[in-house]
Length: 109
Image (cartoon, rainbow, N blue to C red; front, side):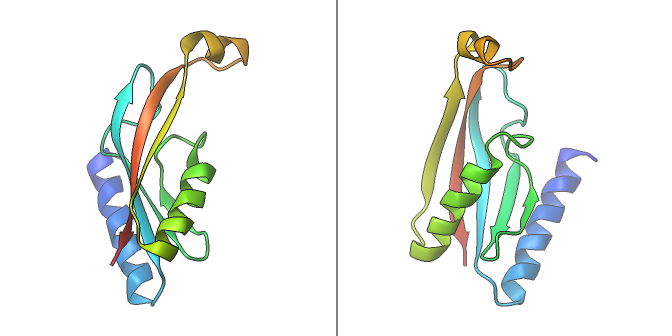
């Protein structure tokens, strides 16, 4: 699936959740350095039941982003999240990639 089609599906899902009366937050990758599993612009929507659509990392930070998204749904405050690991640390723990990613989380009104 190409990234544009995937992004459209995420926005459609977020809109459907809002139409159903759910609170929704949208997380967007806004910057990457080094190796990153998802490119800038990748998105993930999260609703107030914990359901998720899309991906900002291919799985390695999704739970942390969903946790912060829940806070954003409660207080309507956007959040800028930074995640990273050095290449040296990545090899020490058995990961093939290091790098950093910044994710912006905002409530969908």
